[in-house]
Length: 186
Image (cartoon, rainbow, N blue to C red; front, top):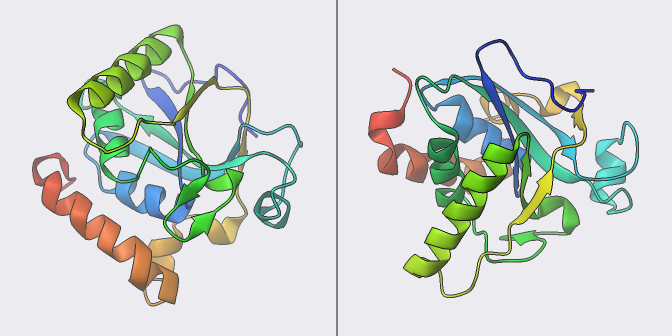
């Protein structure tokens, strides 16, 4: 469990929900400047929720990734650029076939600056008309992060042959790598 306000020395943290955490983790693992990505749960009221509880929609938690990054290499704005490119922020409580509040698009900001940046990014993306519908990404203060069970960590890396990974995660990673080639780790 990560307490509010916890930041690594000289690093920043982003807590993001955009559908299945397996997809988000796999993408952010490849991003230059990202030092750690952990799958987990945030945004609900139940302490120490399990995957089963979250999937049943009873905890109001979102599947999220907590991303520790070096702001000297990639800014929070850069993190959000990737975040909004890899999921559909216009669908409420849904990403593709994954439906439920646990799959909502969300940014749990850690600082007032992150909130301000996220608000501006959302405003700019809506104004640019990138999608045919407005962004419904929840913007809420970070309160608590509960790491997901061990078998969820590095799920794509450890289970590339699993059907969901083949059909959903792998294409998302391929799209990300093509679009952000210059931002990939070597």
